[in-house]
Image (tube, rainbow over all chains, first blue to last red; front, side):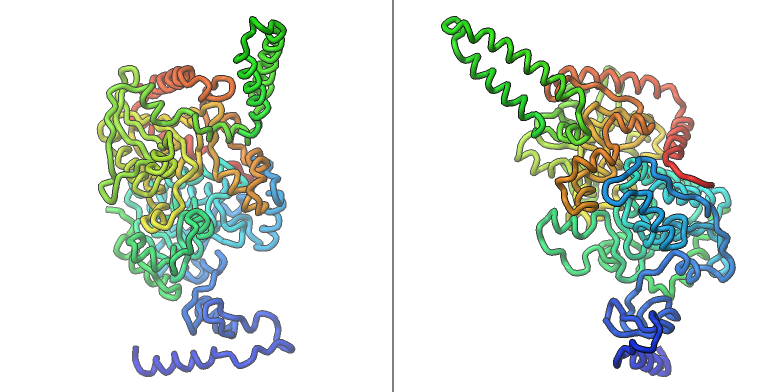
Length: 289
Length: 314
């Protein structure tokens, strides 16, 4: 890095060093504490760096609309399957009633479900794209998420356009029982058909991607990218800990550990994602001869 | 099993009465007769209206017939194949070639042990990634040589351990799902005991799903579900009803094609009768599927998956 950038970086670091967090006459959300280094950050700065801490590089979780805004060429996104909503096929009432959970999630997020998809462009390349929103019942995969993801695969196949999916999910949605588990098979079957047709599929695994999502379509991509520090795995860390009755090693199930273990292709800083995906698409193209 | 305790007590009482010489105490004969009738009645009431949680318990019964028992009873000329060619042979997963009434097939199955030693070697039927990779290898082999796949489900789930995660448990399962969706041979799945989540699904969908009456198949174990929802695994009885995980539930949801009746009290009460029923069901199903052309088979399998799910709006 040139010297001038180094000074800029230093300046930035100094700027984000907290003195005292003003609370009295500053509106909520102007100052935030980094979950990584615990420094107090000016929200505007954090937003400008795509919710990555300018100081320690911690990638904060973001919503699906934020994700699409960061990743896609401006104004290129056309949403598909927007109207699909979950029902309560099993009449699941143990714990908080599922219908109430759906209503609360809709209210809180302004979304119809935990996955948004459509067509767009990344670095000028046409793509079919989708992103999961962890706020919506952990972006768990029930009938709607599974169906929308399957349709995204089918749309990519039909248009012979590369597919880019951004995952973040707790896994299969238990409130839809076996219907959810079978979405793993359904989405995987759709992924296999896309692969057979030689249309590229790039997956970006973000924090957290767990359970039935990791164990199905998410890891069937041609290229697997993860964000720094993302938790990625099958069984949740607490379940593993309870099973083996040992403390887990540091960095267990982190993107960096998966890279070292040979499970993913690369760990990419969020601020470099669009450029990286663009470069990959230039190599993989649409698969058309 | 907890809910069988009253029956057990009566059976013990009957056994102790029978040890007494009836010719010396003729008044006991009547009592024995009454007790036997009582046991018969209790059998009926206990086992004809089983709750989902009771069925889960039966599915886990230590004496319940296991994959090995079915393979031994149903097939001839069994050749087991070992290893994933990458790391090691996972004994929690069976993979092999076998013949069912003259029909050559490839066989997969989760493998629980009969005793503690066997269970330790087989990790109580919970595979590691290498188990799934062995299964995937067999799927491709079956595909290349035109052998229908018969798969027996009996696992609490894929093993949630450090090494399993480090070696890519999720990726291994995903690869199985992709492979299974594309094989150009009939795939018949038989739920014989536990169908625990992704670890079951990895070898657990295909062209037909046959469920034993007391087998279950679930997105999550009832205990884990109860722990997440109520921080109390003891409410598994409640969650097992909510999850709709019994064979009967699956049939109603359109996910299973056939439920094979078990002897009263469960498959372990009369394994021979259970084997006969399962042999019949698999044979019939393979007979139905074998005339279908490979392309049509794969297409129908995709349509079958494609139809699963309930939602509102377009």
